[in-house]
Image (cartoon, rainbow, N blue to C red; front, side, top):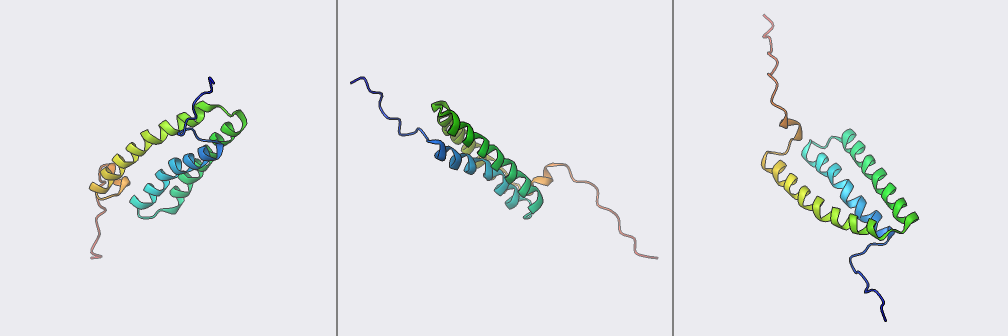
Length: 113
């Protein structure tokens, strides 16, 4: 009767994959939304996110370590708060991440005289 109670917050390896995909693809979506729908960098960020997600999934699938699901769950809490803060900040600034760098002087136009 000393059976350990079931942890309902514990993910299996497929849950880890889904959670990691959601957590790692949010930066790509935010970059797409706040940078005039630039596809190249969005694709690169998304590809890196997919690689990280698949690597964590394979680690969870092969090892069956319970700590992986707990770490992913905690990472979800932390990154969700961070993503909300970043989205509110970017939205309040008008959105363009590239404008974080100070503005360069505008090139002058010649009238052709």
